[in-house]
Structures are given as structure tokens and as C-alpha cells.
Length: 311
Image (tube, rainbow, N blue to C red; front, side, top):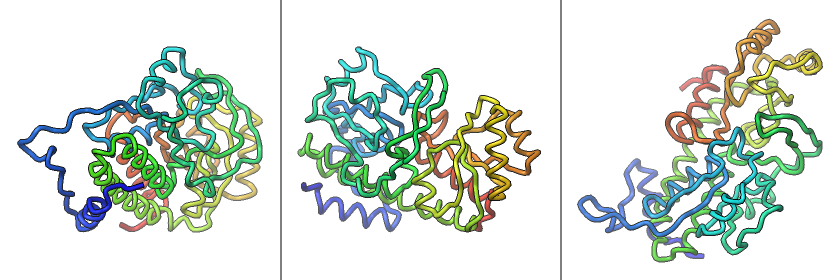
């Protein structure tokens, strides 16, 4: 499928030299911006960021699970389903992320599985663990690891799939989508380099992960560690602490990676064990400030501070 190759190549060169890509004539200052052409539904914040960066003013991005504790456990209402059926495109994370999809009827021609082309890079999860997670109730971690976007190179693949779908739907704007993809790809490549530099000093020092959502992150940056099932706002019970103590005794981890800041009682109990708190936010929902890329760069800073990486 063509994606405006001349414009794409020019934008890549511009991004590499730190210059802004030349805007299409309709978006030049003093001219009218292109009119909105349609709506795209997304299922998590990384895809909302991708769709927004690619579509710019052309596309209305709708993220119905934005208020959910975790979009991976969100279930659409009848009203949500009816609204999604009217969208021009429905961008899915894939990798078993949208567990609700099997129970609803949506137009197949408008579904875009952004990880379909990267299926050989997905990580299978052998064990099934069911536990509670916020007001959405119990959920399972099984089948396929789904936080693909924590590997920026995989998110770049997802962005390419999204750009191709946008160009197929609105071919008259393919050059704009290609320019957006070039700029986005350059940002993700820079982020990948930041994260690689920030995590390199960790070497083979073991970590403990508070939740089994860091598989792609671990693989990309060669991080060693095991996961438990701690929630940041719920004090773990005696069995959970005993499990952690066994891991600490066996591996000697001195950092525990969290999706968000845990409550003070948890932090204090970890401190007594000589374990520090390191927040690496997956950013599956809209952040309170900034955007997805800013959160990921903040993760790099936190890792840099924890592991002593030089700038």
C-alpha cells in the first residue's frame, strides 16, 4: 500500500536533522486547515496518541475507556457499541488486549488490529492468574502479554499499521498521514534510545515488578526480574508479602517497579526490606498532564535516576 513515499522520505530526513517537515499546502500558516474527515475509535491511550499524531486536525479520536481504571478490563455498554459501529475506523491494540471484542458485533471492515503484522513478536503468557483490579473486578493475565507499547519499536509497528489504515480510508490525505508517521517514528526512535541508555546501567541486577505487564519492556531492554500481583492502593496480605520475601531472598532485588506510586504503608514496608519504589507508568489512560510521550520520557528519567545512568 502506498503511503506517500516521497513525502514520507522528506519528512524522515527533516525529522533526523531536527527540522519540522514541510506542511501540506492546506496547513500552511495563513491558509485554512483541512476539514475533519471522520472519526476513529481507539482502545487505549497509546493508540489515542498515535491516531492524534497521524490524523492531526483531520480525524476525531474517540477513546471510550479513558475513564476506566484499566482499559484492558473495560467493557463497553450498548451505547458504546452503537457509537463504535458508526466510526470510520476502530483501532485495536490486539495481542488479546480487547477481551470484550468477542462478545460484541462490530463491522470487520473497520477493525484495525495494529499488532497483527507483528504477531511473531508477541509474547505468550503461560500461566493464568485471576485477581481483583479496581472497580472493574476480577480479571486474568493469560494468553498473550498485551502492553506492547512499552517497547517503542513495537509501538512504531503499530503506528505504521494505523497510518496504513488511515491512508486506505482517506487516500486523498495519505501524504499528511505519512508525514505524521515520519515525525512520530523519529520521536519513538529517540525515546527508545533514551530508555536504552537509562536502563543499561542496571545490567543483570534483578528487579521485582509489581504487576505482570512489563514483559515487552523487559525483553527490549534486557531487564532481569520477576512479577508479583500487588496493587498500588491495596496493602498486600501476609501471603503476598511472603511471596515477595522469597523472591528477595532468592534474587536480592533492590528496586520494585510500579505502574503508579503505591500508598505510604506499602512504600514503608518495602523500605524496611531495603527495596526502593521505581514508577514506570504504562500510561494506558490519559495522563493528568502532558501526553503519552511525555510520560514515557518521564519513565526514562526515573530509570536514569534509579540506576545512575549518565546523561
